[in-house]
Length: 222
Image 1 (cartoon, rainbow, N blue to C red):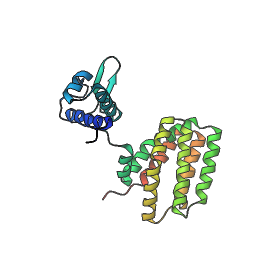
Image 2: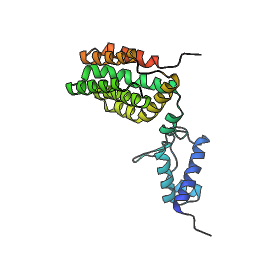
Image 3: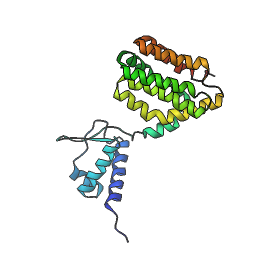
Image 4: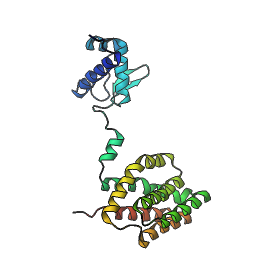
């Protein structure tokens, strides 16, 4: 019979600990017994317990505090962020864009540099040239909106936008292909207005324009 590898044993120990957490044996914030006690309870070595705890800490279920011990952080494993994005429908995507981009646009109006304005103007011109192919239209549209995030000079908002971008692109392409119309003069004029508001430093107007524009993309209630 082949020997059980330590990694497999650690996985089993992690599953056993997770079951005990889910059963309510320890509440959120509750302290787990020490490694020696857990090793005896699980019938494994301390090194296996240590690896199991490391796994569950990486999955945000447990947290280790130097000199204090191991504590329960969550009763369930947090769902993978990419899985959440893949499952999100178009309205959820747009609502997330509103949450990120409205604040970012206001910050852009306050913080934009001349280089930011130059890059935004260039992105706006590229957007104007690509209104007929849905993929090119979405790509140039996203480049403009990302330029607004860059001009906000907030690395966290930019990172959120970047991580969200692939699902955003997919959702926008699907939506515009379904509607069959995109990139008309009125739509582009809104983006020109957003640029002008950023250029003039009017954060309230920039935020209002961005909110109205993104809100208009949502499906009407049934």
